[in-house]
Image (cartoon, rainbow, N blue to C red; front, side, top):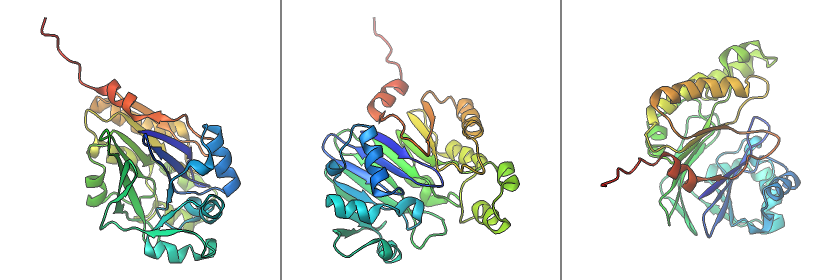
Length: 273
């Protein structure tokens, strides 16, 4: 499995997940043209995408869904309530497929298991994605007011984890956001702070976790070094041997090869000689 963070932050989010046979976009929070540019930057054609799955209706996850789906004939996976909330982005000509947390979605070589999150959207989901051929598991949870039991359960035993680390609590208090926005972000239905992300990582860490990508960082109320430091210290104490990366808002990260990460953290084999 390969995973590419095409962009992540308060202004737009999109992640490309690839098996040997399938390419899936999770969210499209950029314009159609910008999304095509980002795909081209990592050597992928927009018409090669097999499906686009939308986690919730907020514009930083949905801005380009209608344009992209219509231009390239890409099937759109939407929760029923999310589809209604996104009707202003859709013309009715798109190929819409419903999904829910009741049933996993099997798309080519990928199995997608949605799970509900606590966030101020009409029907917010995060997802665990497994490659059927290898069993490699990716967890994506980028909009969490607070981690609940379902989140912790779904993110167990991931090989790669893409996790929200939205804000530093001090920077949020000192930011230019209106007080009402600050309360929303820091509230139980808003976004995880760096400290909360570090605590969540510590509860779902396991020795074979190959990588963690910190995502959805606020440009106004966070700093990549603060996020990396908060989570990195916690992981180091746990004996983490994988890679810790920070998603970027304005350009993609290099594709992440999950098989390579697994080899990096695999237990050393003792010689019998």
